[in-house]
Length: 104
Image 1 (cartoon, rainbow, N blue to C red):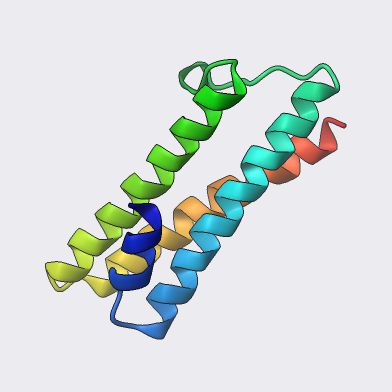
Image 2 (image 1 turned 120 degrees about the vertical axis):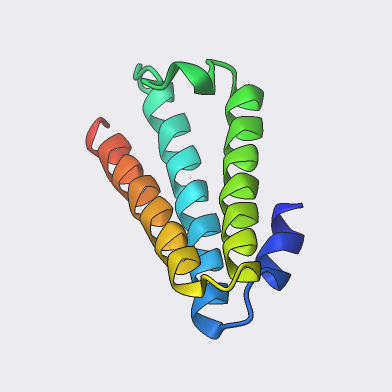
């Protein structure tokens, strides 16, 4: 679902590029979380859970939700707001990833 949404949910090049950023930042956050946990860190977000599978499923659901929300904003004629959503979520996941790497 997330891949399908990322390819078709934006008519602009910027939106499609930001979709790639959403995927990349979510992946970086997931990988850095796993690395921090392998060194004794603990996931601070209780919704994410403690198992690797649960964390991966929650991250996929998060990416899908962001892309679906941006797609709906695009459909409603609000492409700027859709891009702000994509950029903001990307920024949050990049910051989380940077925080996780500092913990190592």
